[in-house]
Image: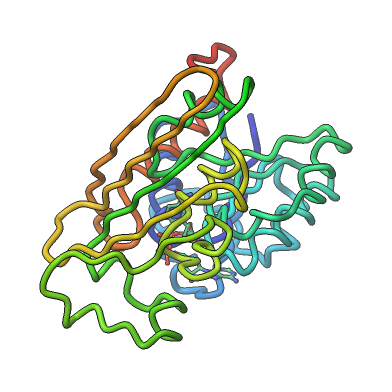
Length: 268
Ligand SMILES: NC(=O)c1ccc[n+]([C@@H]2O[C@H](COP(=O)([O-])OP(=O)(O)OC[C@H]3O[C@@H](n4cnc5c(N)ncnc54)[C@H](O)[C@@H]3O)[C@@H](O)[C@H]2O)c1
């Protein structure tokens, strides 16, 4: 039994808690949850007969084998670091927080403990990883989202960009992935995972297009390299509770948990 602790009991954390209860009997035990909003933590475990503990992040790390972070990019790096230093493993959802943290990746290797980054809302990372083994010349991500999925981003506030007044689709950002992550920390985790799988945040190019009236969050990946060229497009429906989070991101976290608990791995 893997003892799991979840930090962040919102859209992703809440669905993971339900999935653990329903689909991982005998394989995973949810031992603790943590949320800065205690009511959310309480609500997320209401259907357990034997309740997991509600703890601080530090206390949760102590009693878990695997810590799942599904809270915020502002804490994901420190959670990953503390977890590894405690000799435990971590699954990180707020990937943007670790984009330039090679020190933490080195720590994982030194400690021989896994750091898991689910592919989230982006499909085609298997091909990107394979391509990177030979050499990638260009990697581009084009993300199209409706205004509600981008609202509140620091870049929009700083540049006084009013998405409500848009009548047709508009490119609102084009630049390096590492800058996209700073500009839209809650909206484009896909740029972070794409950079990690491929050629890094400095060389990966991200274009964000705001599309008024769009029903899906769409991500197109174009990669060229020694292998040839690949292009994938994913049209994601938003999750029920959070328009910024695609349903596919929740499913990918569940799939990662599955791969952790099984001995047969499919795909690279
Ligand atoms: N990897 C991906 O593909 C992907 C996709 C979508 C979202 N995300 C990221 O995953 C994270 C969770 O997404 P979500 O949709 O569940 O968000 P959410 O807002 O629905 O839930 C986040 C929860 O974390 C809690 N929280 C925030 N800061 C905290 C802190 N410092 N300590 C403890 N609890 C804290 C909040 O109270 C909330 O309950 C976000 O950072 C989001 O950007 C990643």
